[in-house]
Image (cartoon, rainbow, N blue to C red; front, side, top):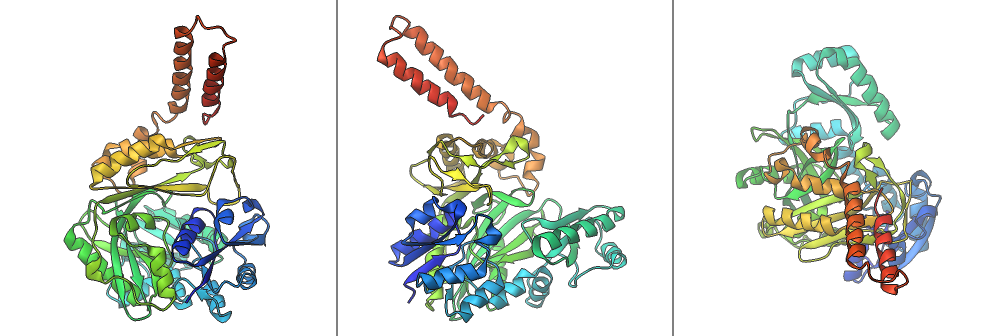
Length: 500
């Protein structure tokens, strides 16, 4: 049985995995770059190993350094988290060669599902619905034009090895085809080292629905229901919730069965996610498979009551799944907000820097997966996400109200964050009513941003006004009085802590 796990990652996901390790009596090993010497995951782990300079391509992405760290600390397993090396088949294979347990799927499953064209072919063979499009790599523009005419506009040109919105271009008319192909190929080569592309029909106003799956080495595969991931910016998820307001019992059953079928088609083991697009008529289509744990996995844990990391470790230990499909039920509603160190008013520009003060929300049905603390400096080298706020309620309205309260309580000073933007989303009628799709931010741009520009300044004015009221009420007190001095300091700190 696994006794010591190296987490080949950083930040909040490293901490999240370590917490389950501690509950299971398993030792954890942190790896860290120069920028992460003072990171919370390094302090929390039972052991820590330095892996190099701050840039990820010199530390967290170097397979040899991760393997060396595992051997040097006597770790018998590696959990990759998400991002970095988590979907690198080469890494999974190398772990196998070195006699280290990789807590994730096989290299074969990663390779098959990681290449979008191969994945489409595999899903078609498994009778899983896919978006109409090509099943071969494209390089010839004339052939691309012929296929587009056959499929019908609009279409999307996508990188075969893509993900996260990279190497993706929408085409609305034939005059855009050549430029879309060139741009997609160039971006794909830069991001993935592979410029292969394919074309598929563009689904108008879709919902992005994903199904969590778990599979063991004994032939058992189950799904843990859906997550609604349609609130996105630049094809990146911002807010997720479960259950989805558009998925009824019948659709859930059919999509869940397709998700299980998709996982079995590649002999999948461990945790994974099957992503679908659902159109306005209730038709669903396979989009891709993420062969790892997802950022938004906590909302599934909240509603279904399963510790997904514990299940991952059990599967890696060769055990059977703890649950059968008929034991999986949804209870209540959960929402997750991803909080970034960024400026929503400046095209979501990342804003790394030092955290002066932080007050995290508490209360019933509240979970914070974060890694920053007062005095911590957010590095410039990595993704600017600093935490995830997860709330649970008996129903969707209760969950929304709870998230509103939580976002009011969540205070971070020293850097700009997306907390105010998340709050605005919670107040948007389309979100509250559940009448939104993947174009939510675009469609609600005016509502989301009309007050966002002034909110920090208005709060500063309120603080100053309150202090002036205090002075007026206590004008007979000497300026030398310690009470006045202390309150000057208090209000001064409140004003200086604003994220201006």
